[in-house]
Amino acid sequence: MANEPVNQVASGVSNLAESVGKMSQVSVDMVTNVMNTSIDVFKTVNKLSIDIASNAMNALNQALQGVSSAIAPKK
Image (cartoon, rainbow, N blue to C red):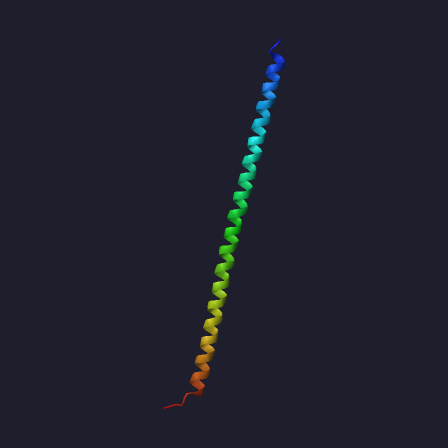
């Protein structure tokens, strides 16, 4: 009976430590998820930007070829 308060305190400390550990793990998981999402968004935006620039350059090239063929003398 004399050990009952000590056991309750030990149990409380153990529960507190477990809760802090779980909260820390959730925080780490959230940071990891945010970083992974940010990287995925960056890769998608980067690919889209490259595709748009490539398409614009191809369109410009085709337009210049059309102008060149219109100006060049026919044989």
